[in-house]
Length: 468
Image (cartoon, rainbow, N blue to C red; front, side, top):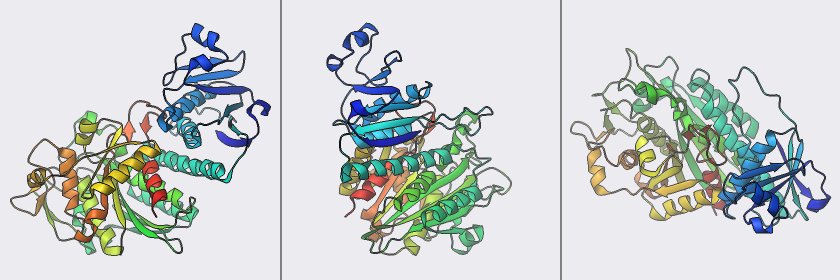
């Protein structure tokens, strides 16, 4: 669907449908009709009145989330009609919420449908009396961000048969070519030669070679340097600590962290961010077989730390450990280092399906990340480290264990595991995003469809835009 910004009075713009977002039914010119059909000013409450060419949609508040949900609800209804144009008046609404809500809400993943729907040429016209430079910039940025989120969703939703480490590397190369980025891809020979035995071991039983991917965006006169690291488990069977059958379904989503990094990197040059940004991805498939790594193995990571494996399904942290070490070895003078991973079911239990768990050592930085995440329209909360949980991942035979000796606080102990692979000078620059909840949900929510949401993309781009 096309979304256009129109400089004209709302009444003077020709359109087949008019969309009205209603937070107070008393102010509506069609109050009597809306009351007669039981319309309410609530999320996802909608009334299509084709005889007068209007869509009314409820809105519970004036914030980003409410407006985005409202316009996405209206757009979904619009798409079910044969109308080709719909218009809405910007007034004092959040333009970013309107654009992103519309473009994210109309997303559908139909790659595997045998009968494709005929694409309709439909257009949403956002009407504003005068387009200022600020309005135009916000509009263009919101379109770029929405495209990045939807690209992320596409990658996550793609099945493991069609998206394995080699394909993820090819996707990264295409993003680099399309956006004038640098891209390096390393195979298992590099991993072995550079002591990245944790990552190498996870992918050992797969027929698909593991890939370490490094994307770089280096504008002239960059103010800061940011590193983004993504967990790219293109499929996770659990390894020899095999997942129950029901839990294997949706494990194509275990590449959501890497997919978010790819989505972010696809947008940074278009947004002209004055920041050097590196995207590091560990693309691996965790399978079973005669060469699979085993519980009781002790692995040596790139930084020399030894890891006792007690569960092969706690594999994402092993991949991230080596990728974090690689990033800090290869990139100097880092200002921020963020990692993204569908790391723990414990995070979903703790904060629910819709919220990102934010962890790290720097309280101020964590608060900034949460604030920017909320500003961007995503949900996030901090989970605090503490000295007592740190003790639960100690090993009797190695430096550290890949699972804790307690069933409680699993999201935090996973974050504490990763902290062992952050250099001292970067401790206060690092933030861990556990996106296990919102990255992939098997039901539509708000302006997010069934499946991938693109979690972390808007949050990170919002943070990057605020860096001074």
